Length: 167
Image (tube, rainbow, N blue to C red; front, top):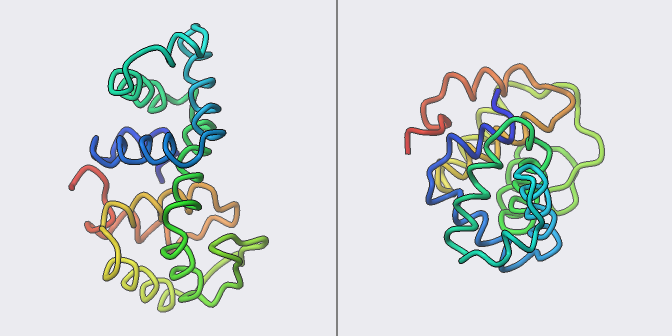
């Protein structure tokens, strides 16, 4: 099971940059919070990062976000991207599992899900969305899911289409 900071380290640089660019363009509060967390970890003021050229700043931010001490910031950053950009994927997954949700957000997850339903839900996602994006979502979901579905963990570990770093 990958933690949020590990997801950033294992995903393709292109996807990591796309996520950061999306947050920069569409969710200023989340972007500012991420800049602040990275600045604190680097022992600099946020304005120091903000004055750097965006490409340089983003490369530096992604390097720091991939470290264990910034797991919470990386998790918030990935959640913001998923909830704002990939609502349809979240809804498709939860609906396939017959889990009541509101735009991909769930109040109470069941403690377990049926293997057949889970496999069918994953197949739906892999058929509609880029495999790397699905892998990031399912890993993030599994990491943030307090119920800890053992069958999802096993699927993430065994299905090569859900392995990060293979894309």
